[in-house]
Image 1 (cartoon, helix red, strand yellow):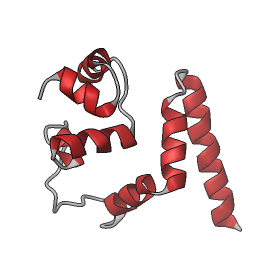
Image 2 (spheres, helix red, strand yellow):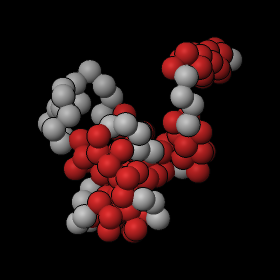
Image 3 (cartoon, one colour):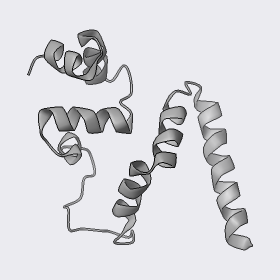
Length: 112
């Protein structure tokens, strides 16, 4: 499929598709899901050659359900809203502060 056809299917320009391919712009979770639907491939297709990739049945030191937790979170309305808003923040310092804030709030909730 051409960049132009993919862009039309997503309602964006082919230049935006080029930026995604080059890594100039980030692809949000919902946009990645839309791309995978249009191309009829699973989202995991885009991560098959990622550095440090582990076999699908390998959980390493993580809990077995951790990947399901991420998928469930990003599938929720709150997860999508949070992800969409977060990826729009360009300043890495602000992003780091938000991550620190969320961690602090989570730790506070755990201690209650």
